Image 1 (tube, rainbow, N blue to C red):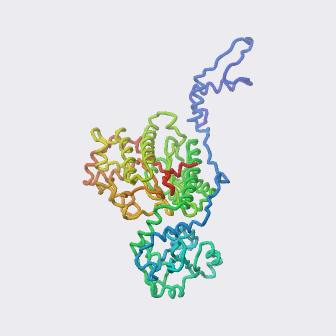
Image 2 (tube, one colour):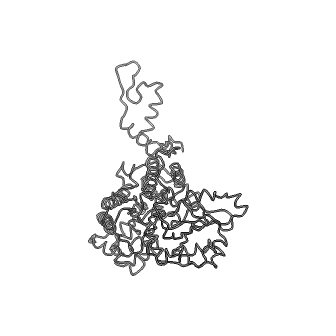
Image 3 (cartoon, rainbow, N blue to C red):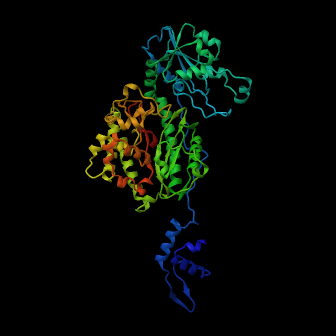
Length: 566
């Protein structure tokens, strides 16, 4: 079909009128008629207005999309510290290890794995690798399949750091040395303040003779795998006490750690702004190119890699909490998503192994802000519900506050919006929804989590299972069975060094609704939902909205929203 045939009839007539004029000094306003210079013929301005609107928003031949601005230079200088970060973290860990039974009496040493480098099944190709969090806390290692050994200092040795650090590297074949290279051992020793740098072998067994090797409960298997045959000659002991002390040390950040976290968050916000300009200025987008552009721009600003696999989810894909962008056929990964649709971007890079975590949800061509059409109205409502809830949580977060209160303030505001806009049947109050945890039908995840060397940094067990949001745990338990998800039920006093996310969301997940409607233990919750509204196509097509920021109290006690600092 020719483009002309797609124009409204009044547009065609105006087009023919304009084409008939060989020269118009002031187009589309007035023209002189032959034989009568004083007579002027006005052009129908309403027709011109209709044509202009049609061209800008509906005419398929006109593409005014805003491309992604791929900068070549970072606008920020990289972060610098007065002394290596490991001097701070090792001193902090020294304090935490004080009182560990057997530590300091030459009875125990501590082994931390740097993490194994996984490969593809049936191939010699390697998967991307990140240093394990506990080992990364001791130094910015970049060697996989190694063991970091902590040996307590003698009483006569001074200093703030109460242990020696040694690094034991995997033995390399000649082929591996040629293909993969290997670091300068002496440089490693000098850069990271190491007592020894050696290869794994019999000498390690001799060094550990008569001593027990403590490992964390979650790293026992990986330490054994790294040691290989040597593990049968070494006394490995899994220690809950050691695990809790290391987690507690990592939970509150030092000044240097805060510097890296703040920079990683600043970079994430800068890249998100680039993505926002592209999405809100385009009539159509593709998920995979946005994901790739996000990764590229992050590396321009000193991020070695992404802290996690970036989530770019358009339309209904946004209802998948951990949508795996790119893990789909080409036809899906490069599918064009047009307005009115949301694009949810949950992505951030890591700097010096420290992660950020940021989520925004943008409207394609920002149509919902321009018009109050029936298609964009649900998008606008859901976005405002989430935005208001997130703002309430961020505003309340501060030093000396309880985290459970931050959660409750956020959820109460979210529930108020859901009830106000009719997502629950008439007569159901906010208190009813909170008591039955019916809000989890729309937000089946926690309000936030700790951030650090891991994007979901571990939290001390003493802070878990004490949140007032888990009064009815059956729905909670069904949806969350892994250890990382236990951060849904945490409570602690916010102190200097604490870094958390606040990330409420509203999602339309038919598979979750099927569970709620089919299982008898959710009968009360099921009867509270206004299914006549929720299951309408206009709401399901929204997919989901999530807004996430990294909040912190720095070592001086100041509240900071790291992902909103410029």
